[in-house]
Structure formats: C-alpha cells, structure tokens
Image (cartoon, rainbow, N blue to C red; front, side, top):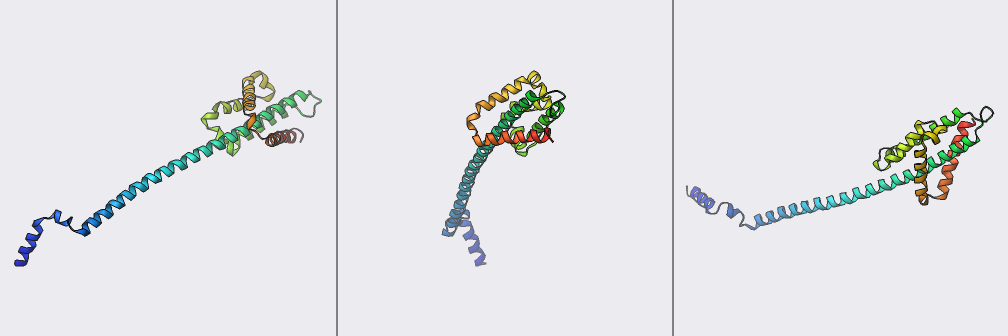
Length: 191
C-alpha cells in the first residue's frame, strides 16, 4: 500500500514538467530540434540547387534551339538559292530534268528538313520560331516554280533572317550546307 501511495504522489508532483526537467529529455529535445533544422536547411538548399540545375538546362536547351534554328535557316537559304539556280537553267523539253522533278525535289528536301528529329524537338513547336516555321510550311505547300508569285513574303523573310544571322555562321559549316543541298538536288534530278 505504501508503494502505491508513493507512486501516486510522485506522479502528481510535477507530471509533465517533471519529464522535461531531466537532462536526458533536454538532449532528446535538442536532437529532435537539430534534426528538424537540418531537414529544413537540406530542403531549402536542395530546392536552390534544383532551381540552378533547371535554369542551366533551360539555357542549354535555348542554345541548342538557337543553333538548330541557325542551321535550318542556312539550309533553307541554300534550298532557295539552289532552286532558283535550277529554275533559271531550266529549258522546256530539251533540258536535263523536267519541272515536275525540280518541284518534287524541292518539296522533298523541305519535308526532310521538317522531319529531322532535332528540328521537330527544338524548332517546330517552339513559339519563338513559329513565324519561321510557318514560312517554311508555306514554301513546302506551294510548288517551287510558283514561289516568286505566291510566296514572295516567305522568301524575303527567310533571306532577311539569314542575312541578319550571318555573323553567327562558321564559313565551313555554310559551305557544308551548300554542298549537301546541291548534292541532294543532283541525286534527285539527275538519277
């Protein structure tokens, strides 16, 4: 009986406050507090690092998009120039190629450009290049021998954009694009 009375009295003396008066409870409380602060700090630092990483990825994507845009712009420039060259050299009935082959080749090379994976991923649905893509589609949808009449605005705009970005091109790359476009036409027209 005495044991029960001493237990009841010791429990009723301070109860909850008595628990926090022991050094062990203060140590436990301090450890929990440090863990909580460490978790908050970790979450904040991780969030900042993730933001930096996302910013860097967005910048890299923007640079890749700009590079792909410049490449496709140069290709379109040479497609237009090569098409004009073959249109000027065209002679009815006695020429080395017929007009249908020329317009089909031009349509085919533009379709190939639009279906390139990098172009699809970085340019086609990018809002910054929407007007440019619309100009390419306008040219693709019209026969190349009618471009001067029906699509002159698109021709002029692509040429203006090419001239505007001409400083960003490497001469060797430009020469390579020109050779590839010329070879494409030769392979299709003179098969």
